[in-house]
Image (cartoon, rainbow, N blue to C red; front, side, top):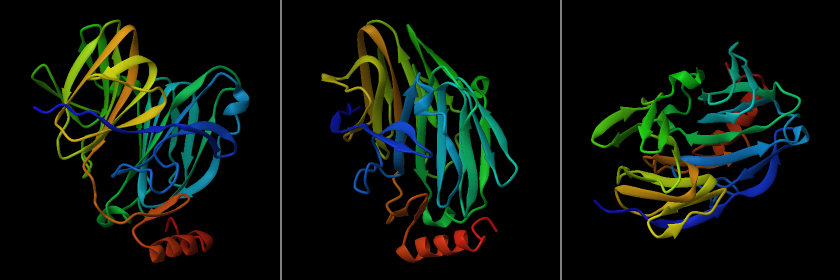
Length: 281
């Protein structure tokens, strides 16, 4: 097996989205900063309600999926399909925009910490106009894999640990995404296979960790080079980090705000559909 190393780093840039929610955006800072099939990764985290209280009022999407992972806090999802989802500590919301969805994500707390991530996962052209869908994944429905002094929460995909195959809460996507939250204790170590066919990254968000001999930077998308295995180690403080990987689509990406298609003409059609009330028809 060949160990993957860090090939590129994309530090999270401070910005805001929605009605003024403060975030750190790594993937998706601009069109050239993506990792096929992933379009964007936002980290949000603050104990100051002013940084998140305005939330994300009603807005449209087309052509991709959003995966929101709440580490700590409480947010309510509502959409035009009539779905209501309470996103709480450790839960995940997996939303397929498909041909069109209009939704809101609003904080249900006026104080305390709100912390988590939103990942945008592209859809191939053949799936961009599928029916919209939504899945509310409760913390107890996310498999946890015990490690020596740590654990892995497997949100999506499959991972082999010590010879045993583990399947995540979501495992039916054509891009075969892997989305894992890895927690390691003091002087921890984990070695995991990652398919050579997948683009992959690590995102350290707590503590200190190394990939091989390279120290991972906090709140940074560490894009991995070629190989089929990763080995992560920690020091005395331990660490929490995300492993995100997926099979690249290899198609053109044209984005205009909340619409992600393959051509400019398709974006113009999405804008017309939204203007004329046909986006979700």
